[in-house]
Image (cartoon, rainbow, N blue to C red; front, top):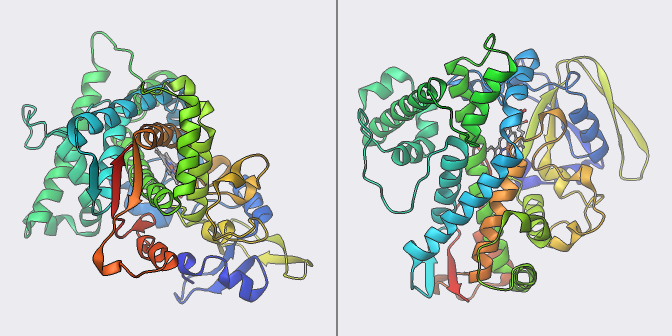
Length: 460
Ligand code: HEM
C-alpha cells in the first residue's frame, strides 16, 4: 500500500478506517493500517501495548543509542534527559537567532534586489533550517557568507561539516565502511570526511563544556543535554560521550529536513493561494504595523501563522506514517461506512501503522480534505485527527522548536516580500490544478520531499 499516493482512498474502498495488509516477507506478521482518530489515540496513549518496532530504526543508531531509535527503559532515560533541553529559554534562543538569520539573508544576500528567483525553494529553506539547528541546537552561529576560518586540526569548517553531513547522510549509512574508506568517488570522500569532522567537532565541544573552568550559561539543546545528563543522575549514570553524540545527531536529523520541507510546502501553498497570503500579511501587520523586528513576546499573537502551518502540515505531513506493533493480543474498535461499530482483533506481534496521510485526508474528520483552508484551525478542530508530530509519550520533542522557528521565518518573510510561483514558458498554458500538481509533485524518503518548487520573492 502506497500510503502517500493513496491517502484515504484504500480506507474508502474497503469501507473501514482500519485495514489489514499481509506482508510478502515470510517471517513478517500482518500489518494493520489505521486512519481512525479514536483508534490512533488509543494506540499512541498505550506505549507499552503498542511499542515502537526499534529494529526498523537501527540505521539511526550509527552514532550511538538515542531517543528516536530506542524503546523501554533506555528510551525513558534518554527522554528524561533530553526533554528539559527543549526549554522556554531554548525557544527564546530559537526565536532570536532565527530573526537574525532572516535579517542577515535580507540585508546581506538578497540586498537591494527587488525580485529574487529560486529554482527550488529548498535552496533557501534547507540552509535556514541548518543555521537554526546549528546555533540553537549546537551553539554554533553560522552566516550566509562563506566563513573560511578553519579551526586548528580540521579540514572542514563546522558549517561545511554540518552541511555535507546532511547531504551525504544516506550514502554514509547505506555504504559499508570499508567501501567508503576506499573513497572511490568524490561524494564518498566528502561523506567520510564530513562524518569524521563533525564527530571531532562534537567531541571537542563535549570536552570543552564538560571541563570548562567557568561554566557559561548557554541554552542550546546540546548544552541542555549535557547539563541535564550531569544534574539528573548526579554524575553516576550520565550520558556517555557516545550517547550524547547519538542524541544530538538525532536532533539534527529529526529537525532539519522536516522543518525545511514544511517551510517549502508553506511557501508553495501561499504562492498558489494569494488571497490566503494576503490574509496572513494583514494579520502580521495588525500585530507588527511598522518595520521593526518581531519579538518573542509577540509570537503568541501571530496565530494566523500557526493556522497556516497546521493546514500545511495536515495536507503535507513530512512523516506520512508512524510504525508501532502489538506487544500482546488485543483489539481495536472502528466504525464501517454505514456507521456500525466494528471490533478488529489484533494478534500479538502484528504491525500497526498509523497512516498520518489517511487520517489527515479522512472526510469524517475534515470537510473537503483536499482544500487549503487555514481557517479550519481557528476555534474548534478535531485535535485527535491531526498527527504530524505523532502523539502520546512518543510525540515529537521538537514541535515547539519548529513552531517558534517557523513563525519567526514566516513573519519576517511575508511582511517584507510576496511569494509567487515562478512563471516558466514551458508551463504557460497549464490550469491551476495542473500547476498545483506540478509543484506539489513529491517523493517519499526520510521525509516527504518536494522535487522542484520554483518560486519568486518580490519586495513589498
Ligand atoms: C515540522 C517539523 C517536524 C515534524 C513534522 C516532526 C515530526 C515528528 C514525528 C512524526 C515524530 C515521531 C516519530 C516516530 O515515532 O518514529 C517525531 C519525533 C521526534 N522529533 Fe520531531 N518533527 C519535527 C521537528 C523536530 C525538531 C525541530 C526537532 C529537534 C530539534 C525534533 C525532534 C524530535 C525528537 C527528539 C523525536 C523523538 C521523540 C521520542 O521518541 O521520544 N523534531 N517528530
